[in-house]
Length: 160
Image (cartoon, rainbow, N blue to C red; front, side):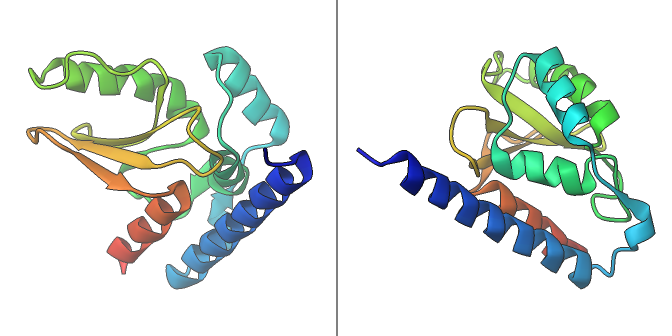
C-alpha cells in the first residue's frame, strides 16, 4: 500500500511537470502574458459543483493558468471556462451523428472542441494527469495521448 505522503509526492511531481510543460508552451508559442488569463480557484470549484465532478489536478492547473484565455494557443477551438458546460452536449450531438459511438461514457469530460468536428476528452477518475482521447468526425477511432500535459505539449508543437 502506498502511503499518503508518497502519493502526495507523486502528485506534486506530476504537477511540477505540468507546470514546466505549460511554461514551455508559453515560450515556444511566444504567448502574450496580457492575453492569458486563468480561472480562480473559486471558479474551478464552482464549475466542479455545477457539473458534479472533480477535475484531475493537471486539468485544474491548466484552468488556473489558461482557463479564460490562452492568446493564440488553441485558436479556433472552444476550451474556455464559459464554454465547458456546452462542450459536453456538443460532443454528444457530434457522436449522435455517428453510428459508431451512440453512447458517450458518463465519466468522460470533454475539455476542448475544434470547429465542431473534433473534440478531446479524459476520464474524470483515471488519474491526476489522465490519458486524453480524441474524436474526429467521420473516423471510427479515437486518438490517444498518454497524459493531459502531453496533449498540451503536442498541441503546441502543431502550432510551430
